[in-house]
Length: 63
Image 1: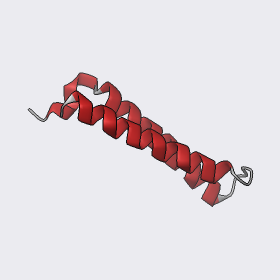
Image 2: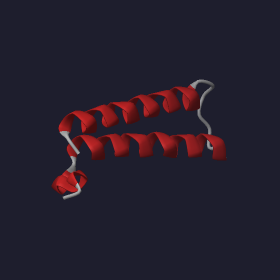
Image 3: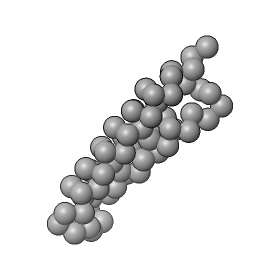
């Protein structure tokens, strides 16, 4: 996967995580299952963004 596509995908995941964070924290945060699942989704989105941006060990080249 070329660098431009990886950076574009990481940007998409960052925007997704930002929107989910806004949704989760807009009315305050408590430990309800919905808020915890939303927080997990934010962390997952940031993790995928980092994975696509950093491409550890050139995993995404598929060669």
